[in-house]
Amino acid sequence: MRLIRSDGSPVQLGAVLASAGEGAIHEVLGHPESVAKVFHADLKDLSGKLAKVQAMIASPPDGAVQSDGFVVLTWPTDLLSDGSRAVGYLMPRIDTSDAVEIHTVSNPSNRANPLPTAPAWTPNVTWSHLVNVAANLCLAVDIVHRVNAVIGDFQERNILVNDTTRVTLVDCDSMQFIDSTGRQYLCGVARPEFTAPELAGMDLARTARGKPSDLFALAVHIHLLLMAGNHPFLRGEWTGPGEQPDALTLAASGQWAGGPGSALRTHPLAPPASFLPHAVQQLCTRAFTDGAHDPTARPTAAEWRETLLGMQLGTCARGHQMPVEADPCPWCHIDDQRLARRSARASYSGRSTDQVVYQVSTPMPAYSSSAQPVLSYPAVPPTAPAPTGNRNLFIVLGVAAAAVLALVLVFLIPSNQKSDQETMTATSRGLDDSYTTSTARSTVTSTTRSTVRSTVAAPPPRVPAAPPPNAKPCGGPVPGIYSHSAAGSDLTSCPFAMSVRDAVNATGHPDPRMVNAYSPVTNKWYAVTCVVEAVLTCRGGNNAVVYVY
Ligand SMILES: [Zn+2]
Image (tube, rainbow, N blue to C red; front, side, top):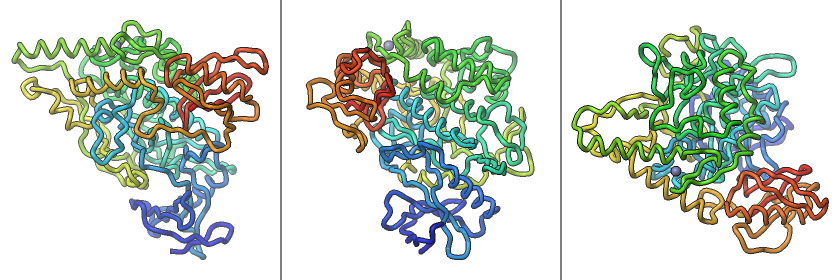
């Protein structure tokens, strides 16, 4: 098929890469960096959709595509017409070969047991990598919020993570966008477990959301990443009256697992929030406790990112990664709890009620926009699956097999069915806690140890080795974890870049959060924070950017 760009130049479409409710995604012949989305001609409100896309094209957020070509947002880049009318748009093509949806990373069981067709790197992910993923997710949200856009349907299927912990948000044309004239293009869908409490009961097809609603979902995603896949409003020990309320009800009352004044206590097999650095705990409290009644109290993505990148990580005697402040090690405690429970079960044949596992059922229905309120609060959510729109399009581009998530069901495992839980969890890919199995536990523990003590910087198998093309290499190879360094900005001197490399090597860790490095140019010491991007990237000092690899 031949279409025309806004400047009149022709575009030749190639094979269909994915097809879903709203349209089809094609490759673009001669332009491997782009794909074309062509809407179905009979799509409901096609003209509104095209107007929204056109408005988005006119206001691209800075950083949607990074200087090294990495795509953070699949933001529309150009309108396509068939000669008489607009039919679709171009957007950056993403490499999905090593990407997985974020739940595959945040959920320990998903991570440890990738499907045969899914990328194989996830079992090597350490807690340090999870912190990086969280920081990179913050970057993506920060970029969206640079323009008048709100992610809206900010759920795990729209977030892809690659094997260097970098994050891409897909399905951007479903985001809420307000153009320069004030015309609102809304996002009518939401998932209750990622929906900010102030939106409960709202008709999202007619209500503009504020950016703080994204910041609620961001905090939930960060919690899932850092807390072994435990959702702050779904898993805990309910100590209040009656049954544990649903997630949206708890969120509205500011009660989250282990939060201040919360009747939902930390589950015995989940890490307590108290193991996180005080600054991170404070952000959680602002997001979930204060933010329940005052959305503006929630930390911004930039605040989260800065705090996460400032964390110092250490290891316990058994080799678990954790913040240096953590005492005792939460992962050791959970291991010990599990061991004790297994021992107790071996001598007790009664029905066990101590284990709660979140398991996947069918793909999660999105909540559609309709005449009815999208989210009724506190009523039971609607059960009819809604059109999934184009959210699945990208998923099929290579991560379909990993995309099995999911409505969350809670059930109790009778003890007579868990002889042993390895079988149960090996086949379960939901929001369960992989530490329920000795298989998963040993995998996690050993990879934690091997990664921490080895020289591997990022999740194997594809260890990134090259800095962005515009980086300026500095000095020859040296012995150590990293042999090379490069300057990433004009304000970065090579002597300082080499000094940062040496400081990183001196930590003995492949991805330290922060190092102090001496600049022979200014004769001063500078603190730089480091995060794994294409390679380990350290920023700080006088706007210095140093790549270490
Ligand atoms: Zn430990």
